[in-house]
Image 1: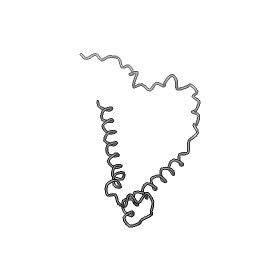
Image 2: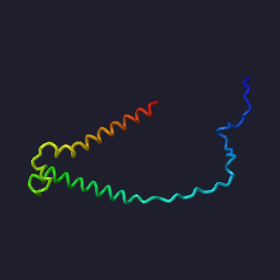
Image 3: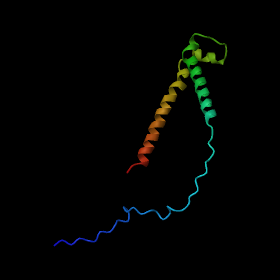
Image 4: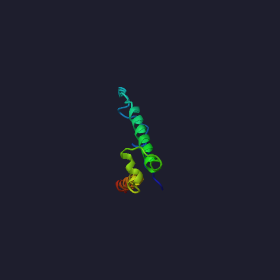
Length: 108
């Protein structure tokens, strides 16, 4: 003969309200938001200046002479490629380093 245990509601699955549900909770005060558009324009301006300088040093300096210190790039065949090509390599190493840190931290 099968005798079953009395059916009692499970504490974790019951529909009981939290004891704190009826307390009056004041709404969170809104923090003033900061306007970051200045930093966006600054980043846009800096990257555009960097792009124009790199286009001039890599392509146009062989055809135009300005008579300034930038004419050093006209005779150079190595260092004018160093900075523009170093940036993607640096970003690649930074991304791989970040990915390795994520794998290390979230290893289960």
